[in-house]
Image (cartoon, rainbow, N blue to C red; front, side, top):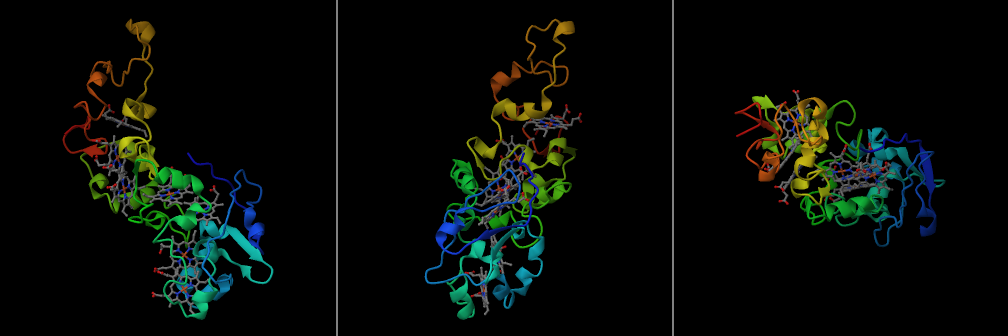
Length: 266
Ligand code: HEC
Ligand code: HEC
Ligand code: HEC
Ligand code: HEC
Ligand code: HEC
Ligand code: HEC
Ligand code: HEC
């Protein structure tokens, strides 16, 4: 799981590029380094107040956004929170919003990678959503302008699943036989950014299911030799697992929920 640092409003001051070197997050564990701010040739930073003139709908609730807690302060401009992601806006504003004068992260994740470099690595894994090539965007799953950047964080896991099921309607259900794991979210089995495992699974093979279903065998009393026998329910599953994974061995083909069987079968 992710650690949830408590963010303080903090400032990072910029003047020349060198001063952007460090994004300070007041008294938290994480320090992210913004190596180079996003750039628009010939443009300079103008501050978020300027954006409000024409994009009231984006600025109105921005103070509730995760990234607003990263206040970028410049004594002359004030807050430049919008331009952290969109790049310096002077040419854009003076041209009245001419195309090609501002960065739109919908088209490329580069601006996000400036601070979230680890995500670039995840999206480069063989099994990942197609964000690097621009077919999908971080904004398809994250909300940059209002509220929490991760939808449904905290209590509302259904909200987080809803992000996924707007595209993946098959997994939405309802199913006659629900798999309770779905209540813990799609991310209990999938890494939404990417994984070395097929289908972006967080673990391979039976290990995926055993994250929740490992039940201690009553080795002492049952005469079992293998104390690690997979004894979900009363049956020793070891021989079945020689046929494949829990879902490919012909036993639980429907990990998301089944309309045919309590055992999540076809
Ligand atoms: C004078 C008015 C004006 C100001 C000031 C302004 N914009 Fe815009 N902006 C526009 C208009 C008009 C469009 C729509 C262009 C279009 O759809 O072709 C636009 C489009 C955009 C887009 C989408 C661009 C794209 O390629 O899809 C972004 C992102 C954006 N603005 C961000 C900002 C930010 C950040 C600021 C403040 C630094 C800002 N704007 C200031 C008028 C403005
Ligand atoms: C964390 C990065 C981030 C910050 C900070 C941010 N944006 Fe955006 N912005 C995005 C992303 C991602 C998109 C594309 C997805 C979307 O439209 O929600 C976007 C899209 C836009 C668009 C184009 C919307 C459209 O309809 O095409 C405008 C305009 C815009 N942002 C303005 C702003 C303004 C004004 C601010 C400051 C109040 C701001 N943004 C702050 C990431 C950011
Ligand atoms: C200026 C640096 C910077 C940029 C640019 C940036 N982020 Fe962030 N982002 C941060 C920091 C700092 C945090 C909080 C620290 C952490 O990662 O735990 C954060 C947190 C997040 C979170 C987690 C929010 C939460 O509630 O835990 C998401 C999701 C996220 N960013 C997505 C994006 C996306 C998508 C973009 C591009 C549109 C983007 N970020 C651009 C610095 C940045
Ligand atoms: C397919 C949906 C999806 C896409 C696309 C996506 N994310 Fe996420 N992201 C999530 C979900 C869901 C979580 C919450 C994960 C959790 O709680 O385990 C998350 C968590 C995060 C976090 C906070 C936790 C962490 O892993 O550090 C950051 C930062 C983040 N995403 C950044 C990004 C960036 C940057 C992009 C684009 C390059 C992106 N995400 C694209 C779904 C997505
Ligand atoms: C904007 C639409 C969209 C959203 C939102 C989305 N996905 Fe996807 N997802 C796709 C597409 C398109 C593919 C196929 C990618 C490909 O062909 O490489 C895919 C592929 C996948 C796969 C792999 C399928 C395979 O056959 O290998 C998994 C697993 C997955 N998504 C899970 C998720 C989860 C979990 C979430 C929510 C955190 C999510 N997706 C959000 C569009 C989306
Ligand atoms: C209990 C673990 C688990 C949970 C929770 C889970 N998945 Fe999966 N998912 C799997 C497994 C295992 C596969 C591989 C199935 C296969 O290869 O036949 C898979 C495959 C997929 C695929 C690829 C298409 C397919 O059926 O093979 C998509 C898309 C997907 N999951 C989306 C989601 C979404 C969206 C959610 C949340 C609503 C979710 N998953 C929750 C285990 C899970
Ligand atoms: C996030 C935790 C979690 C994961 C991961 C998980 N499950 Fe479950 N599963 C549950 C819970 C909770 C139940 C409900 C148990 C109950 O009702 O006693 C359940 C029930 C089941 C059931 C219903 C029958 C029964 O004996 O309870 C089957 C079959 C099942 N899971 C198979 C799988 C398979 C196969 C995988 C791997 C693809 C998997 N589970 C991964 C949490 C999980």
